[in-house]
Image 1 (cartoon, one colour):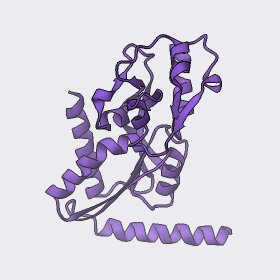
Image 2 (image 1 turned 30 degrees about the horizontal axis):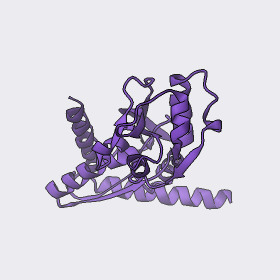
Image 3 (image 1 turned 90 degrees about the vertical axis):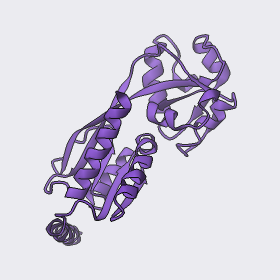
Length: 232
């Protein structure tokens, strides 16, 4: 097993070296990135815009949870990725990329009447839903029983569909802001103003032994500028 791991790492290193030797150009070749779903919904249209403006680029983007992002970047299957928890791994370089608040989202027109009102609605869960809701609502309602006692009214693992049952009045959820803003029917949902402030940091990661290629760095800079313009 150790020999197989060594051979695999050596093969990855050789391929990365060959890539570095032909990466002087920043306007041609593949850009491979992997991100969580929420920030991915925000970035993907901009990636397509960059590709339209630079036809020589080939964008390969995958949506994945943090654990899969880490594994994919470590295995050199993707040049860089974004995660919500900064990794403690010397094989990875990490840097601040963006910040994203968590939001409590209700059906439009629904007035929040405290914890009991949320219980009456029920929770629309998703793969990170319980963890996100626990973190946010434990601040918003410090004396409440907690999410273990919250009835679940539905579940979806599709980031673009989580808010659909909320929009239909079937429950509430807790989502990152970028996912909420990507939902098409904003008039059918409502973000609770004054909910406890909880902001996640998004970290850019790549293999530490190699700097990003010119085209990957160009992509990172482009996306970061779009985010700054969006927040201005």
